[in-house]
View: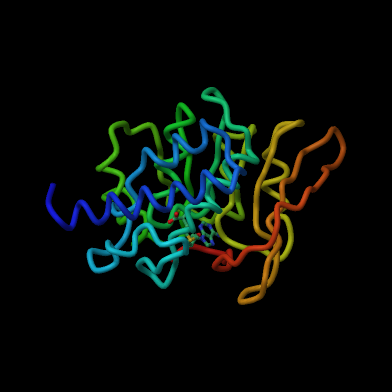
Length: 215
Ligand code: SAH
């Protein structure tokens, strides 16, 4: 193996050993996470850091999520292959790729056209194309495919977006970071009930803000 590839493989093995030891992820989530090569979703010069246990910068001033956080969010969603699944904040497409290992068709919304193209290009490295990237404002949800069983939001809003709640099935789950830009935010698991919803905290996180409109 090429020396550089060997170093990447070793850093991936180290990160996954650490994640596995944390004991918070099921085997199926771990398997889906480990099957995607994060180095395909970062800039050439960040490839040596692809398996750092942190978020990393991507185009348009955004970030690729931390591997463990992607795992925690996916675990909380308890995704089935047949679920109607919506992702808000495609970014690099990394999380989309992990979701596509667990779900028959992932719908993913991104507000930056530049990132829609970046993600589509990055995702060419995946074996399947069971995802649809949509250039739109995630605050609007995705009416034509609603209602959803599961919604995963990768950008922080100050309140739970109304339209996303409306587009969930009763019993459906949404995972999202809530809080102000630049401050610590709370990762929440929201379960829709017949006439309202319940929330459970999954811990504290730092995400880029969820912004209105498209660019
Ligand atoms: N899961 C992604 C994380 C990307 S960061 C990854 O692994 O790469 C969050 C993304 O949410 C950014 O790309 C940002 O542009 C996007 N975003 C922010 N507000 C949005 C909105 N209203 N609708 C859709 N995408 C949004």
